[in-house]
Length: 444
View (cartoon, helix red, strand yellow):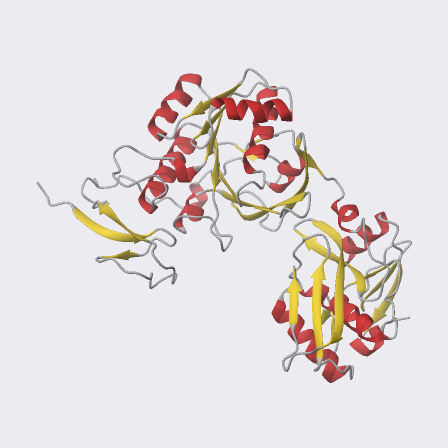
């Protein structure tokens, strides 16, 4: 009998070491190395009988989708849930992951689709309490308090469930693996098992995953590579809206977002998120409106900036929802190309509403907000501002100009400051600028 081999595995990144280490050399995390039994994956491998086939001989497969009934969620996935797919939903504790999937299960069960929710964190009674608060449930929705994945698979087969929801993958285990639930090997093998269940039994599988303090899904990075779709739930306790972002989707765009509002009866769809982000817009200096494009949707958001005299030898520069490195470049361009004195000023920049905007199209709006706050002069009212700012002070072209303008027009904004373009939108007054100096002339 072969000797059982053990190794130390990092619970954060999956790094293998023959001995225990206080700090992982790969991800630099402390006290994450755990001892696990290592098995040779080639011990029982047989010769493959697969044969190479010319690409011209392969028949194209049609992607079949099931409409969930939640329009925002269907649009996020590219038009519906793909049959036999494996979807991973990650997010911070208490943000609404279980609530969203319970609402999704309720919608699917109402369409005569059998759904099984297997929870390793809550009892059937706890799930029922949330279900009563959300909506009326169908008899096609089943719940199971279990964390043995083999027992869950058996129950799903007996019920002939079309959809399986796992809450959460970090609580699941396979009996033949000696390590504890949540360990690297358990998470990896359980996900591999669920992948086989989804593909071989034509079953849609949703997995809920916990996140680390850095915001990444806990467990080995291979977890995200094994699934078909990875969704991240974003939001905080200071705002009611929740954003789901697709960071991986084999059957759709990876730039789409879905916006929901957290209410007492669950998550409600927001069909026009721009109204939410501009609902409390400040009419003071240091505030501009820009359009951020997420996938196929344009969102109007408010960019705020505050410039004040610094009491520190090194002025403070802080941002929330914006790329700090882009702001540093914009400040340098404003000093060099526009002659603004900012070297002794504290500068704070923010995206109102908690949204994150990292695209270069927001450069011009950030620059105008900073200049407006510095000069105590209001930015143009009811005007949308966007454009990329170059190092020589030029305003460069951005993509999806027509999409941004039409979204502004829907909300009654009829003026835009933007780079030179041939795009025309009826009802919009377009003010093209070539450089930052021309853009600053619009400050009242």
